[in-house]
Length: 386
Ligand SMILES: Cc1cc2nc3c(=O)[nH]c(=O)nc-3n(C[C@H](O)[C@H](O)[C@H](O)COP(=O)(O)OP(=O)(O)OC[C@H]3O[C@@H](n4cnc5c(N)ncnc54)[C@H](O)[C@@H]3O)c2cc1C
Image (cartoon, rainbow, N blue to C red; front, side):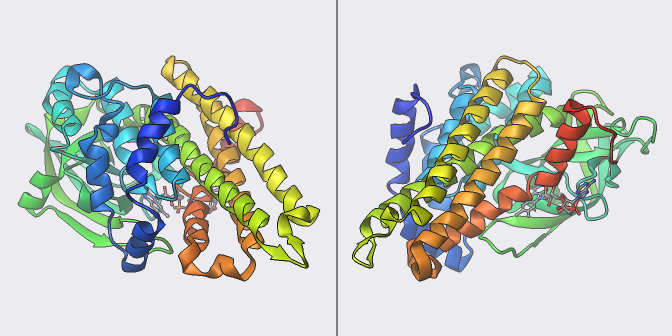
């Protein structure tokens, strides 16, 4: 089942081939033991899929965001979870579009070869939350370096990365232009660890997710680590955010197909009162409705990705894709659990694990409310609520 005729069959088959080596039992064990999927990430790296967005000139596969989204969708559709490694794809946008030639030459080939990982994006702070422009982490110029100091309440995969993108204030917040004065840095975490200017503490969550609190304690970053112009970092992360929303929409869509495949197979096979439960419209119609919602979300994902790849503005479409996909996958997660009845709660079926995992899309990396606020303000022209 796919929503539309699909020109990505060869790519899908290649990713399915890798994922077949990492079945439900693999992810279940990791979930139980709260471990990072090293073997899976190594396999994806070895075959170059995590470098799919890096141009061929720098050793990558030179693919478009559209194809990158298909890769992540297939990981989720197989029952896995791409959260372990997806950030290498969405952090790439900022480096590719706004990084200097020197930065690209210095880092991209080593990321493409798998020697280095860039999969941490350090933005959120406890006191700022969804109001990113209220972050308090500072980067102060000191000779040929910036000195970063502050606390990030969430930074995923920082322990599994060599490089991170960090957002910090280089000048105080100006209420007449809140987005100005934020700067984006490419930080070499190996240096930070050697300097002893970074402290990391794991955050335990309801799902197996490698996420951490991070303190930057006078971390010196050479000026060559500044991405683009000082003070313009918010503009650069907007590009990254659109890419992130599209890629995560694809993950949610992959989850949606997984729930739908699982639920329809079970509804056909499980016989109660002498007939398959799927023969009851109370079971079948919610799945049919979920299918329609998922197919619509899928179209919006491809529309948003096409605009992104064409270099066109895609904020509304990227946000709508994320909203529709997160809603469709969550709806199907609930329907799948209903179809499975008590069995849905049994760990061995993976339904409860995927249920927990797909719930995250309602909250992170951007909450559904904040998407609705964006659409209200930016598209509908309604008064701003913040
Ligand atoms: C597993 C996980 C991994 C994460 N990884 C990273 C990471 O790698 N890097 C990173 O920078 N961050 C990361 N985050 C943080 C994530 O981006 C934030 O949790 C998310 O943006 C929401 O911010 P918040 O949690 O501070 O919620 P808050 O901003 O405190 O919001 C709480 C609730 O209030 C609602 N709300 C707030 N303001 C409004 C408003 N004006 N109108 C309507 N509703 C509103 C929100 O929608 C939300 O439901 C991660 C989070 C999780 C859970």
